[in-house]
Image 1 (tube, rainbow, N blue to C red):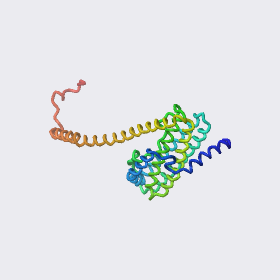
Image 2 (cartoon, helix red, strand yellow):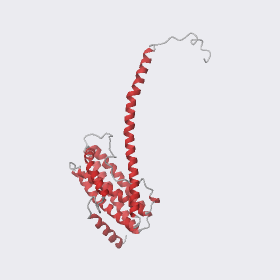
Image 3 (cartoon, rainbow, N blue to C red):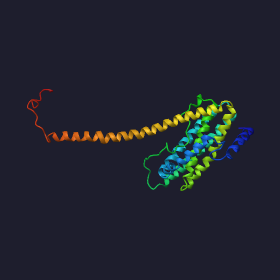
Image 4 (cartoon, rainbow, N blue to C red):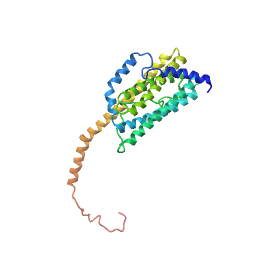
Length: 278
């Protein structure tokens, strides 16, 4: 990489690192609604992150998502014809890989500190999601503007979520410090994706953002529907178990009581000579 590329990238980094960790650009109605939702969900987030074993599992899950996102960003850097975006995507991928290492290291430390091996438990992913990966997108089929719009909204949502998790982790300073460090990078990612979106799609950037919002809203609805379907199906199966299976079991026992016990005599017709097959 030449020195002009590094200096150009540094200007974008400095512009992003000095922003606030969460709401890094002009606030609007969406930002206000996200902040209100963050406040309303704080008790649930506090419950989700209270258990050390669940905390460790979620951090390891975040590590997988961050590492996967880094690999997809490297692929995006290979495909884009824009040299500045190529450099930014590669630096973004490096940040994602570092986040994955931070989450993985802290999650492993929490697991080692447990007195007993953790049992497979409820992770509550839909109550406390991490950064959404790029698995839902086909990067080869996206133009730079559409990818930047998705990345901007994804980083903004992740920054809001991570800020909420940081706020409820007062009793775990090391994990809180991990989220603090990640938040600064998320603020830069949020800012550079928006500025580059305006640069590469000056006339269509608002339309691309709304299209990405609608896509994320639809996928969020699908995730919520799947979670609710799991809960409802479990409830229905429990009701069926106690309303149908128990009566059938009682009927089967009643029929079994009517059956004579012990050996039964064989009829003389069946006790014939054994010189034939039947």
